[in-house]
Length: 306
Ligand code: COA
Image (cartoon, rainbow, N blue to C red; front, top):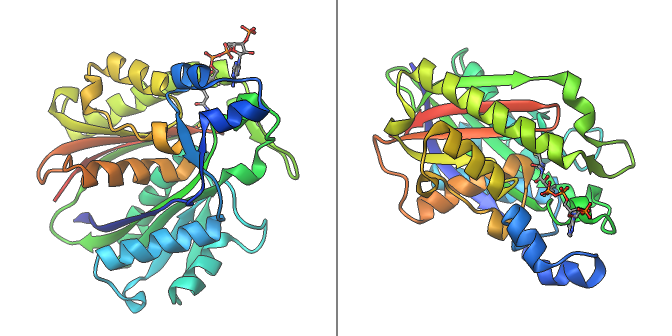
């Protein structure tokens, strides 16, 4: 028994902010940002609610399901519109859902944590679950701080998961959290995101490699068997370092951070959507989905597309 991905959708704000534009108000440059992060432009605008609802609607349309078909909404966000209520009930209302709805906050691992949560809910009696990752990070960025302003952006992605008594698209998970690293990447109430970039970088590579290796082992396959890696989109150099240590060529990694920047829990579905649009998702093939973020949290999963 297991879970099937039935449909996907994304939403990004219309407003494009290029590195050039940021360079006009910050002591930075297109060259520095592109070379040190891989980011060239990002989307800014909307809210966790508006972007999440649009991505959710598109995923439901893609899965050919009606609001009454959805049994649960799990919405991953680090940047809810309000502390209370959670963003999920408002998104549910926008989508015409009357099912239970809750937020999950695992920072940039949020989408994978939400999928893991949905898997558990599907195995205990629910038939179909809408999982959304939606972020309005720009609201919590100090736009005069070049350390953070060049990295974070807004966006959303969603998928409809369905219970299948016979087979599964998700073969394994490896999730974790290390709260002793909590102060490395924070946003206090009423404050802005702050980060020890170098230490986050070091630990990110380590947890991605470790969790990916464990997820591969549990799934009973090797890195050579992977057709695709769909990583969290934080920094191209983190993706390069992690794939290199796993023995996977960069050609197998999906990269969209050049266009979207770091959209936290939206980044993995944004990358998935890009891979699908470009015909890189093929039935029967294996992929590694892997994320890390504030907490620190991390999450890797091996999936096989059906
Ligand atoms: N533009 C221009 N120069 C910048 C800059 C910017 N936006 N940000 C920092 N610099 C400067 C620094 O002040 C430093 O100058 P100095 O040598 O005179 O002191 C120099 O560039 C190098 O800074 P450093 O911090 O060593 O750069 P880096 O190569 O480590 O890159 C990050 C910085 C933040 C891009 C990188 O550490 C990173 O991506 N870390 C992980 C972040 C992450 O993944 N966060 C999300 C987790 S979900």
